[in-house]
Image (cartoon, rainbow, N blue to C red):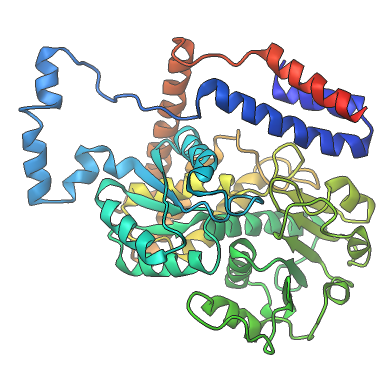
Length: 473
């Protein structure tokens, strides 16, 4: 039995309310069991084709001395003669892991390994998880990342609490020799924008005309708002809420380092002066939640007050703020979540494999908002090449044709921004990305076929499914 078959069986067997809870419990249990079975998700395989005595003297000593000398004389050679040009560091202090908060430094490894797995299979490049024990000291994080930068082609920051994540990003963008971005911010923001662009096409509304309510003011929502404004949304028709209320000129709690964009949001949004979310949702066109794991964080009555053809994104992980069925029953026309077992997954996994691939193939020195918006439009446009509708506003992660398309558009944007070191055409980037991504998947398939990777037993999937069903019947 496969996980998809088990999820379908749970939904067919249990009531709607029980199934919503049981599917999450099943996925939790299966994930924990499968991670223990495999001992994690990543391993390292040599890239070379021969390792006899003669070749070992080429790959290691004495031959490799020529590589070290060449890089010493020109550091750029490291990007073409070692794995550096196709390897990303996934860096976290694990203080904001999914909806679970501070999970201790090593607690973030599950997510960071997951990122590395997706980067390899979907982006065709390697990634190394680095979970740092730094006690929220961003100066230590910055110095550590700068120290390891000569090993990597780019840095992906992940699961760092705010405002520390903004502080680290800003300092690293100023000091690091390779591009640094915060995937929970620009990555999630670009995919949310892509999903919104297609949702608005479906309901026949324009980005410049709609009113948008953000519930949660963390890295994902605050950056999504910035990207939406850059793409043409009216800042005055945006209102954002956190646990202290609406962001507006009266807020004085965003002083200090790291809160610059939040201070700007306070000055340019919420022209209507809303003070609570119940007022703001009345006749709103779009509701985007990225707050805390649900359910029952967002009340169905809020959705009922929204405008006709309302769009609702409930993006909290691991459980959305409101279950999709409850939002639809309350009148939403389109509902998206951050999870793949519901329709319309709005998750940064649709963005970062292609974005980072475009960055690596151009040797970009930065990842700008313009590049993130280009990625969002690329994701949206790619989706429209197929059938879009209320149940399909974005492609799925297994639609591998998406990622070289995104890489090509990001590469073009990097060149237009003046941050690229190489200037391949879009067609050349698309071809190179497609080839690398296919090779990565073929290599993985060959390794699994060889028996080097154990096959998780389908009987165990069924056992875990039956255990969960019995708990909720």
